[in-house]
Image (cartoon, rainbow, N blue to C red; front, side):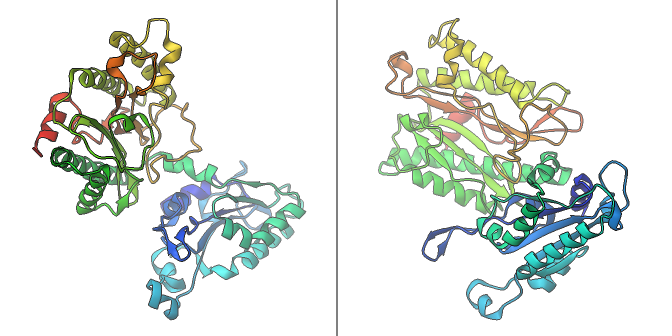
Length: 450
């Protein structure tokens, strides 16, 4: 309810905001992918079923709303509606019971109104008509906030509402732009869930690192074995799902940033880059570690790894809520530090800073939360504030066929990624300390399996 009140306070008077669920997706004719609710709707009400619609109605001053004089009403002027599928015993036989109207009213939206999903178009049209008719001489016209690209099936069902707006030349704007600033700042309870996700993920990394050396030594095992082991270990620790598909990239495959085939054979002489995370209570962890499957870095591997680690540690130390530091400024720092490291390695010259992005092509990090790449509408140039969660993930990727590279480093790919939350004092709290990253700690963790 507090989140809905905060959301309502951000909406202009005379507006209706709609929050759509994620669409159902199918891998074949009637075999669905696991459903994951749209994060904005999840944040505002926690309803987990796919067939629904959440609405917030903020009436204008001409129809009973108390005007603040700023174009925004007090939160208690808002009305919340949740449209859901009614209970259906025949459907429950196949898919299990739904919450239904009574269940949703009791457990999800006790402070609002719950209606059948089929009534959404006519109900919303009735509300918009009433708001338009009652505005009198005021300049307030009804406005619709709705992410039309979120759920195509629902958007089609709401065509009468969209046509109503079009006929009156009313612009439809994004509802996500109002809720994502709220999601960006994590409460203490949200940060605690993220810490649980990070702990489970880090411990799963430890178990997977040990299992990897044994699997490589046995021979015949593929990267998929480690992906399966990781997921098992996260679920064993309470994660409901993976935050995203695992990247398990051994050898030269680590030079492919989003390698997800996970089907190559493990070889003891290779490095293995694993980018993976569990989701606990809906909140994501996102960790990357790189380790030698033999349990010992070669000198060349250690040099590249140590260069990336130094950038990782320096950027984490620089992350703070001081009014000036942002993800964008951390990225600029990481580019400078990576160039310095590449000069020390003999890969680039002092005047070749422009070539850094060839071997470090991605950003230093991203926001983290309900989504692994959370709140995508939020600017990465805004200053870090208490409650913001983000990743710090420098890397170096040396393609095996790049003639401009020294032969010794070709085919080596390294990324080291941690999760941090900015505390109330502006300091960064690292959530992922249980996942080893110092050279000696990494080697020890891997050798446990031998």
